[in-house]
Length: 482
Picture 1: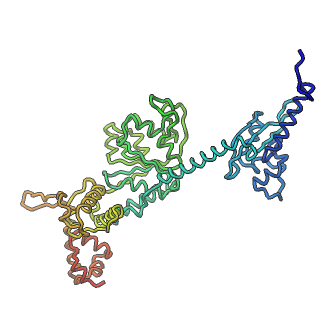
Picture 2 (picture 1 turned 60 degrees about the vertical axis):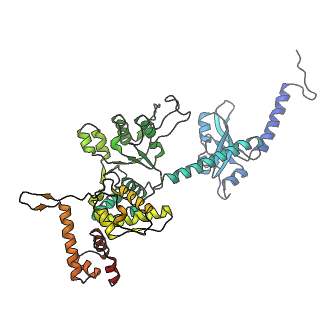
């Protein structure tokens, strides 16, 4: 059967020849840049448009150089090794995204002798919507990453942790030394002592400061969800799982720091998985059988006695020793009563800033009233009490009458057999300190600078102690010579 042909076309060979020539002409008019490499991956030819796109100055020869020296991250060497073409791909040249094709070149026997790479971008009208969409997705992803990084940065520095007592100075120094290392930190202390602030400060002073700080409270998440929160979950891992992988806190903190609060409340079953992450630097998402390497510095915190829990079998001993590399114990407010004035000042400044109101202060009598309470909730409870007083009362200076609901919990003296009273050591030391301050003020005729010199302390420290003992008098302050 004779096939009909269009006028001017004699046979199939003519059709194929014309089609090939047409394709070559179209191809030549489309590409924005082209480069050819030999079997060893060295450039044998590159056109001027590609050089201009790369910013090549034209003075140095390009031919003979490895392709990666001229075009970083080029995949032409991969095409030579695999022998398979990559007809459509998006490739980054600097900040610009281009559409490229990579084709292996073969000799007459079919052996790969090199590769051709071409840029298809502005002239390919059909690809413009795809490129534009890809670039928009890239921009959205970069923006989302910047926003996420901004929300996962440290909010506090060591300078923002209020406290002038020797205990707090020592704790902050321990934190600074811990920040210089990359080992696991274990923050110990009662609730409300500032463990989260310390975790932020350690991260902010570490080499990971520009990376993410991710927080997770083990006591605030149901046990059934804690594993997925920590290690992530693969699609279809369980009924209702998302169609896309969901990274866990360890993956989100990769390169940065994970603050694991209330680690003492973690179930025993998850403690083994946490131990593996700390030992091997690998996580296994729920529903996955692949381990993924991560680089995370862990700062753990707890208000529990982990050593006692280990002895009772409620906490793994191996995990305890893995966490307890750089332990830092934050003192309770009862252990640093001299910090009460500076804490009140810092907290009231923050309260006023949030409320948009003038800053309030606490009188000497008000400080004495606050000092008579034992503060089981520590600084967090103090913050709540000051917020309540500032909201309820308009006075700029808060006195003892503004803390009426606060119980007095100072230790009660205990009688002994011979009728004498034995006071708690802390109360006895405070009474002796108060007496010595009064003696120094009397000897210095009320001039606080001279009294501070007699006591061997700074004037600022004397003012703090006067406030703590209820000796700070506004009338005396007005009479004092500066």
